[in-house]
Length: 109
Image (cartoon, rainbow, N blue to C red; front, side):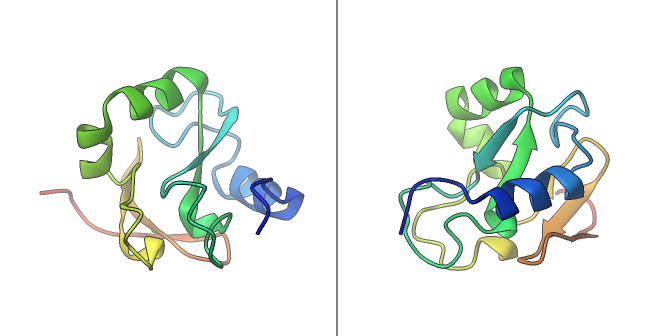
């Protein structure tokens, strides 16, 4: 599988996230793979595995992997189903799906 993010996946995630950084709500500019992009399976560039982040939040996620994992911005490479790991977005805890939608996942504990 190619490591290049398909245009369709980029467009779906940008639309779902309304062009905003999922973490802070500012302008989103970076497509972030929640599970490492080198895990080559059907979810490699799937909307369930991607979120839009601003440059500052994208840098923060990679600099603070333990905390980012607790908030769903990082998913273990060994997790075959990234959609099962919710994300703590700036507005709520959400679950992402493969079609490019999300649902509310309740409060973070």
